[in-house]
Length: 313
Image (cartoon, rainbow, N blue to C red; front, side, top):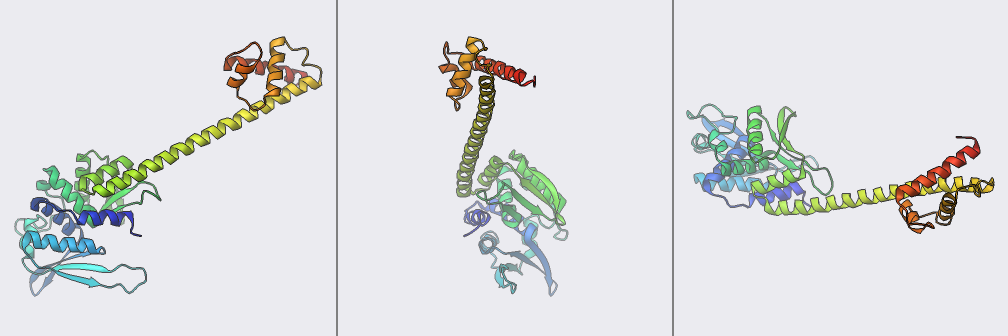
């Protein structure tokens, strides 16, 4: 069964987007997963991924935006349980495309590792860039089996700061930390992860995530309630047992008849109703009803008299 992360990425690769927004997405995919090559004094580009849907997305975006036919190469891994590597390879007009995407500077020579101000200035381009960044370096835990966690890995600190800035533009309360010779921006709050999925366009994944989250929260609430009720019942039983022990001690040592009438009635009612709560005792005691605090006061008096009779007071 496909992981939740792969389901999210598959949905994102199937979205149709406006060319301007597609540029922002392609920029993130290439900046994060691309490698420049030089063959016969000509600049080339390889973009590598283990996800075939992302490879197809790259191929189609390059063709759609720049009318370029890239090569799609599958490199099979020999080791067990290793995914295939998919390489989208471009050998023509690479410098022109990367300059247009602002990955290379205006001279087409230096590499820009940070997110372009042109993207940071417009919310829809930010959404598309975040979508590409998640496709390239993102992961999300399966909400059914583990704690809530979404992250995007960046190799460069200034790029990581750009991801953080964009996420927090949408009030996602994102945080950052160093990780494996790079940096991650991450989300821990379930509601913020759901918001992120919606922002990047993974609507179906967001709805599934919400369904799972609601069910988990409901189960947790029920468990807390059951545990609380069980603890309360246990305390009630323990308290009742101690009260009955005190009453029985007084009865066996001739002290019960010496109790004031109200205390003796309370003692007899407790012995005859060992499982009921203080509130219920207050309802059934002769001369009642009386309040829970009144019942507690009388039982405490009986316990004190038993302790005195035992010589423990």
